[in-house]
Length: 548
Ligand code: N01
Image (cartoon, rainbow, N blue to C red; front, side, top):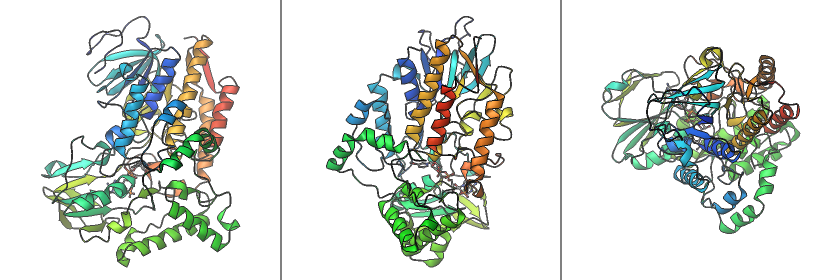
C-alpha cells in the first residue's frame, strides 16, 4: 500500500498539480534501496520507497529456498557506510545464510529508522516523466499515484524471476516452487519424490539440502556448471576481532581489485607460472574455497588457454568426488569457466553419490511438458510430488522492463532497449531525465562484490542529485553522445573477454527471445570508479543540467 507522507489515506490519489509529492522516489527496499533512502534523507530530501514485498530485504526477502546463503564472504557482503554498524554487527558464518542476511537488513532498517518512509506491498507498474511539471509520475499496482523530482530504480539485478514457461504446468497436481519466489511458510520434502530443474547457483545450493530430506531427488540438468567448495563454517571469535580491528584497511584494499572483493587476484598470468606453481595456486584456492578461484590466474577470463588449465583441474576434482565415472562426466562442464557465474557449494558433487539422487541430462532433450503427475523429457515421464524450478532470472534488464517506464517525449524504455540495454555508466539513460539505476545494465555490478558496488552507485547518485539541486538546475539527463561513447567502450572491453562465448544470463541466453549482449561492464571496478569520478571532476561530463 502506498501511504503518502502527507497523511492522505492509501489508495487512488489524484496527481497534485503543484510541487511533486516527494523530492525522490526509490523503487525497492533491498541493499540498494535502503541505503539510497538513508543517504537522500541525510541530505534533507523527502523520499518515499516503494517495495513490492511486505518487508525489507529485496533478494533476501524472496530467495528463501533451502540452503540459500551468500556466495561472498559475509564480512564483505555488508555495508561500510557506517563504521559503527560494521563494528557492532557480528556475522556468525563465513557465508551468511539467507535468514541471517535478512536479519541484518531488518536491523539496518530499524537502526536508521528507515521503515517510516517505505511503503510495502507497493508494486510499481508505471513510471512516466512529466516534462511540463519536471517530475516523475509513478503508479503502483493498486492504482495509487505519486510524483517525485527524481526516480531511482533500486530494483536489483536478479529480482525478475525467469517464469516457468513449460506446457502443462497448470495441470500439475503436486506442488511447485521457484527458488527466486520461495514461500514464507515451511516447505517439507519428507517422503516425497522431488524434481529440480536447473543446475545454477540456486540449484547447487539447494540440491544437497533437498536430497537430505526427500525420499528421492531427480535433478534435470541442461548445462553443468563449475562449482567450488564454499568451505563455509562458523567465524572464529579471535580472528573476527582481529579482522574488525582493521576493517577499514580490508575495505580499502578491496577497492583496488578488479572485482572489488577482499580476495587477491594472482598478478601472474598462467604462462608466467610453471606447471607445479599453477597446480599449487589452484589447489590452494580450491582448499580455501569461495569465489577467490576467479583470481587464480590474472588472465583467467581473457585467455582460453589459461582457462583450459583451470577447467582441467576442476574436472579432475569432479572425477575424484563422484564415484560413477559416467555421472562424473555428465557433471563436468566443458565451456570456459567464469563466463557463466561460478557457483559455490557444500557437498554438491558428493550428493550425486547418494542412492536417492538421480541426474537426468536434458541437454539434448528439453522438457517436453509438465504432466498431471510429473514431467516428460526424452520420451519418458518422471513421476514427481513436487517440482522446484531453479531456472534463474531475467537478469539486469528484467526488473526495469517489468515496469512501463516512459521518458519525457513518451518514448518507452522497452522500445529504447529493444536491441539490448543502452545506458550511460549503468547509472542513467538518455531520454529519461532524473531517472537513475543502481547497478543498472552496463555497470560492473554482478561481476563485483555487490554491496560495496551498490554503495559506490548510491553515493554517486546522491552526490549528483545534490549538485543538480545546489546549482539550481535540477533536471539532469545523459546525452546521446555520452551514452554512445560509453556503450562503445563497454562493448569493446567485453569483446576482449571470454564472456560472449557462454550461454549465460550475463548475455541473456537463458531467456528465450532476449537480445544477446554482454550486460555487465567487464572492465573491472577500479577502472569503472575512475570513469565515474572523472565525469564528476569534469562538471558532470556527458550530462545536461537544466532548470526545467
Ligand atoms: O539461475 P541460473 P540461479 N529448461 O540462471 C536452467 C545469483 N545467486 O537462480 O545453464 C531446463 O544461474 C539453466 O540451464 P542453462 C548468482 O549470481 C547468488 O541458479 O541455461 N533448464 C541453469 O542451469 C547466480 O548466477 C546466490 O542451460 C533450464 C538454471 O536453470 C544468479 O543468482 C545464490 C531452463 C538457472 O541457473 C542466478 O542463479 C543463488 C529450461 N527451460 C544465486 N531454463 C548467492 O550468492 C533455465 N534452466 C547466495
